[in-house]
Image (cartoon, rainbow, N blue to C red; front, side, top):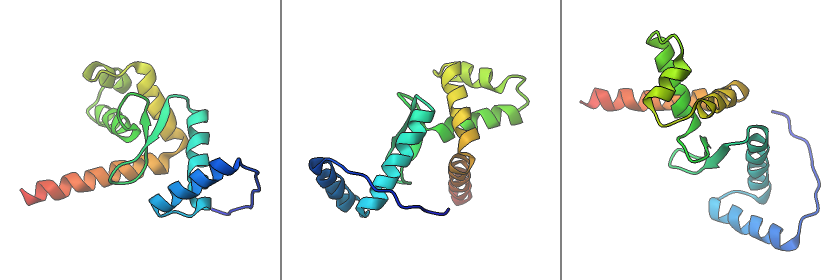
Length: 133
């Protein structure tokens, strides 16, 4: 993806905190600022989406709920199993509301590469574990 320069004036304390956090995470200040801006914009576009760290990196999740990829995977599985209304099937089988399931689907529609990559990685891990017996 092409990049462009952006100049901003930040509070000195905020910039110092940003630098310190970047060092702790092994990122340059610019890399961390870009990640935080990207996540902030996505969360503003789709209220109810949050970003959380984990062993596989940062990922989108539902506020107070599971990761987006998990919800989307369940909807895809319900669809593949022939559910007339896969959203309703997921709502019935979880403690999620319809709005939460639709929010996860909206996130996938907007950022399919992010969600689909996580679903594929989880499926590969499950296959590898199953092969180990």
